Length: 270
Image (tube, rainbow, N blue to C red; front, side):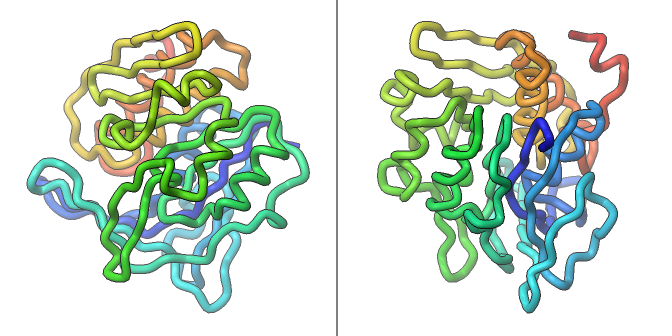
């Protein structure tokens, strides 16, 4: 059994910025896996792709191929500032029976509804520590592939989410959460881009400064943050030190297109 389990599908990403268009593999599990591999973590990934997956070998861990399905295809457009996101294709969902029997620390990081409510509940039952990215719980995708966010209370994930160990959200996603209610039982982390992050727990609130860098491509920053935080916890680090590593990994992700590239100098900055 690997120490960390990452659950969520890989994608084909198309990213439009004012600097041009970039196409590469994507999905939260892809970016998280890249950071965990760079940190030499003990981890597995449960992800699915279609028969058309174009980046075999690019991911840190192989995916399962869903016969007769296309790979989830995501388009991120930053040319007007705030991200506009849509999906051209959705791969098969991940089902409870595909999960391992037990996991020490699991990360639920769906991008397009591939973690079903019943799979999320099974992850809770089978994981000693369960962390989730809010985007996988709040996103609704219409028939044209457009993304909107729903309040957590209006999704099928609210009950299980209340039993999480940690829930990560960006500032926009945090508006769809009842943080004051969640923090009674869940550690809620809100990322603030270059400003760092804030942790909301039952008895404490902790703000951790970020590492400002020039943002070339912000895709995968939140995922890289999540990976750094999970790695720190898995190593027995304190909450504050784990969040510092998370901020560092998030800042490394925006310096260039593609997964975060971490150096020993980066880690020594801690």
